[in-house]
Length: 308
Image (cartoon, rainbow, N blue to C red; front, side, top):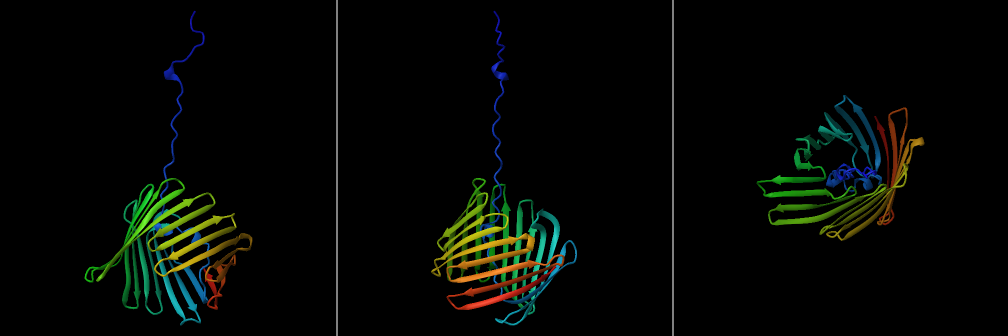
């Protein structure tokens, strides 16, 4: 009798295809490790500030800022920015040139260039009237799952002084990033280096980051409770200054009222809050902030109007 079961040969059996793993993401820049947590905290405000933004074209915009404060003389700043045509993301456009000059003639400027698909360069200059204070050059290479950065600060071949900073970040998994920072400084009669290790773990609703080295430690925790509420906790310890600070911040968004509220409290007995209110259909944003240091008995408040 023949085989009535009709078994198929082994070679024709369906085989389970191997699972295709998604590539690891790029970890981003070292300077942005604590960015989510820091964006929760309110910015310091003091005095009265008026900011007028004007978009001149799709590539060029300017801003005028007038600031009056009881702690110093009134000041004026002219801010100008140019953005090129090469846009890699909603927040990255190359080339980019940004400059800010105050009423005394001091200038802060930076230039961002995309030298290749993965290679970026940045130059930063800072002057005080006619004297150069800072000149810095950065080079950053972004691989598929890693980022390497080298920074030169105030290089002086004649005076034999320089500050070099090297960063490296590697994505080990889709949630875990590890890396480090090496800071080397040299000037006549002094030379040294500081090594810092860094780690970042990103979950669906929270992010934990830690930097630890011989100079101290910096830890932060960011949690997004829902679309309206975000909280952040930050811990900083400096071994040279023998100082430790613990801070708690929160961010509340009220979309129906066009309002954003940020607050903080830290271990130095400081409390502060900033309330921002947009005034549609007018392109106007009002901000009111107050900060109180109970330990030093200092209080300052601020009010700003942003147009455009």
